[in-house]
Image 1 (cartoon, rainbow, N blue to C red):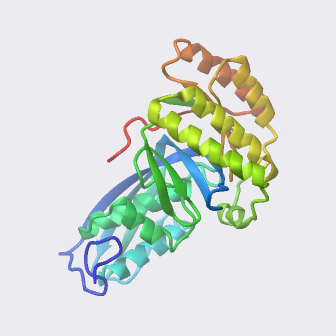
Image 2: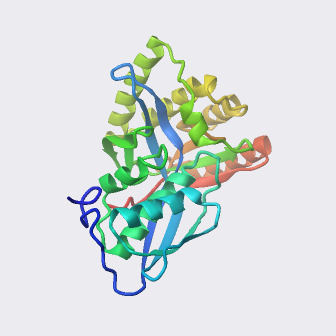
Length: 308
């Protein structure tokens, strides 16, 4: 019997000679380009907006101990994932996991998903076990709802089921002028909420998903921005953003692509195409105005070179 997604047989001791160390990385996301529920199948989904910031994990497998230690120590889900993987592959031991990254927690930038995907890759490398996206899905499905950051580029993803819906490809380069509204959101609690969308709204989500999927494949960033803006507006009944309307006005004033939000978080951002000949001036102006509006403004770059 093979282990999750292949690799070492489950229940068979995996022998690692002495102490071995593996590393893994994963990108975060600036919220989502689109998130909702379809009329076609009634399943929650999202479309990722991967960014260049993310998480890095380093795991040292130690055959001589049963203990799994994690730094920072509050990363309990990462510790649970390590133990789950060690047991699944029959590794008789424990180890040390260190996580670091640039993503703030609880803001909707997929910090937890990035931590877990980076952890899975680090543990897999330390154990010498291939760790493809489907294998990572299998493990994370037992931990929590997760963004699709185990896949390169943009994907539509069933985050509550932790299952790929469709691979859409790399996103044409853009930069996000992002602000934080303050506070933090428990993503697990948010995902338990019912989604009170009408039948008409669910049909609109079907249309938006079709439009953004085609737009990503063809490099049509103007449509990507339009879809992201509409998704942010539809999400207001679930997680309202006090700055959304003013950020949309800024996007219109500077002829930007639109806005994207962390549907289950506190981040709101204006999207600017890197190919825009006035991109530098627009980003400077937007950053100044957004900072005056929110008290903070950070530039995020879309993921430039998604890993295979």
